[in-house]
Image (cartoon, rainbow, N blue to C red):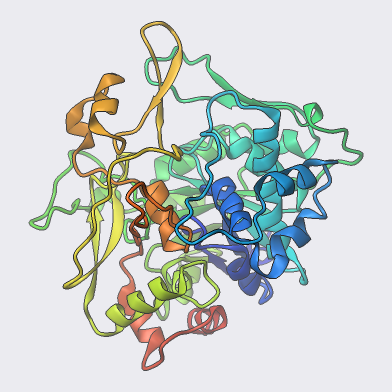
Length: 464
């Protein structure tokens, strides 16, 4: 397939709710690939419902969900006309290897609604971004998004080798399974989803194109040649991209400020990527002026841009969070720190820091659990632990206390970024935990003397 059939610009799938349906729709309406984030999407969905679904957008999309009775049941269970001041959000049961049919259906519905809204009113391409490492909800999210006609699926933060075959099967409503990562397991643990256990569909679905997000040519080669189905393209992401970064290759070395040091071994060999014969996009610092032309000159189909879009008016960032971040970036008070310990995943994670701002520590509490690690207990059962949970709980589950040092709860912090912070036991709000790529100088350049900018401004800046 000719690379000209693919978009030149992909909007990054940032964080929890930052790449929301409004941002994806704004980008897709311009003919570029708008992407919604699937991270923690089921929890975000029910929090929006508990906040009264302003504008009625979720309820409008829910009316189109094809599984009989699911939308009405979820609406009755989770919708609140308004949440009282200081009232905590009600929580979903944490995902486990096996969950109820109702829990799977709610996750499917969340994926459907986000994609349906992103696709509403135009014919531009829309994609779904998922983290491979957050395994448990992914099958249900994929199926729900495919029911809404998602055209691309993008996945990184791991090796999504089984996903292409999963997409092939789900397009025909066939039962799917994939290996579950379990510490101390024997490799036989599986995650499964059978669409026919939930309803009787009449027609097949369109299989979305699959783009793997990689940071090494060796991983790209493995996926293109040995994945369970067709890999339609690659996003080559460098260590300057926001959110999670791949660890440096070889022995971890930190600079004087405590950040991982990346070197020549971490540079992707684009000649080897070109030899694979699939389209690829460059990501990480690709929003800078001239970056698109440079990528095209190296044989890329285009670029993926995240940081610029993260601060656009249409993104899901809370308005006050966005305003304060943009003021700090414009005034030169903001910097980016690649924290090697913050994420429970063990991957380096970028945090936006503002000079003079004192970070507020949270009381350790794992009540969402998306980044938990599954492990096999001595009695053979599967349990879950997270190095960001209370230290005594983590150690009681066989974890090493040293692994808890510096860990932060990304699940709750990233939800706070988009205006859905939980009310804690002491009646305060969960603190934010803002991530961004290294390219905040480009944000400053685009912003200029303005107080805000839009997705259209980003597109015009990048595709000038």
